[in-house]
Length: 86
Image (cartoon, rainbow, N blue to C red; front, side, top):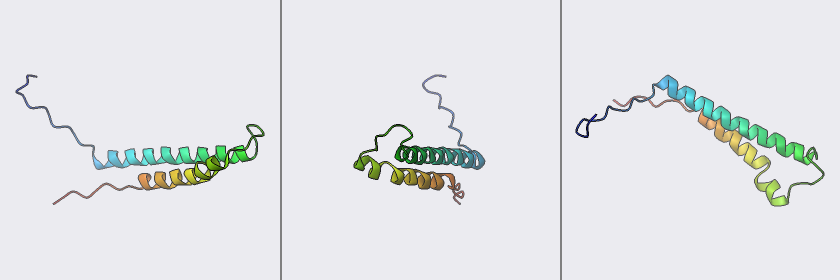
């Protein structure tokens, strides 16, 4: 291909493929949130030692971040493809 030849147009993903992609990405984010909540809960049960997380970590990164990831993952997973423009 020479410099004067136009590049082929990049193919867009069809609606089904885009929907499945967003679904899997959202599910991965929700799994990360679930794991974060589980690890935080086990830390409070002293499963990893007798130390408790500091207050700032407990308030900012513990359950609130796990809940935020679960909600964000649900929003991404439920995204619908846009209707074609007329």
